[in-house]
Length: 195
Image 1 (tube, rainbow, N blue to C red):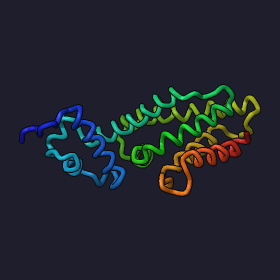
Image 2: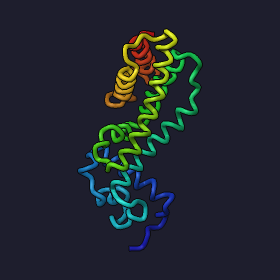
Image 3: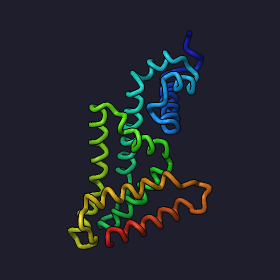
Image 4: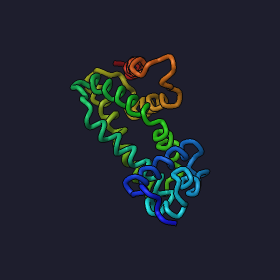
């Protein structure tokens, strides 16, 4: 079959990734076939291999892109000076960034088990790098006396889990605005670290 009019790599490639992300988030990686992804995009299954090596590559690309975008956005944030200012910046950033990407967040956390070992290692390094950003803030706060923490690593994991969990329940048409959610969560995080 000839390539469809308008079916160019710069157009179809992103469509393939978007379709895979939607289907993986909705049905789970294991339950989705390349045929389903192709049908979602509107191409034949064989045409997908012009844009990706295989389904595993799609999963890896989605996770890596999510983490690359996360780092790029975090780099651009005004973080403040003190540990408390930096922690507030991290809290608000994490919520705002992830609320716009619920499917990517779901895949990034729930589909790790489906990564092949070499892909898992790459993603795990990126995840730990991001966690270290928060852990450094908490350690600096503890060292300066701004925070009271028995264990910075445990606090890091707890705070990230709490902040990421917002994506499972938040709805734009719900009773709380995004800004209100950020303010409430910042207050909870602040109290959790003894600030």
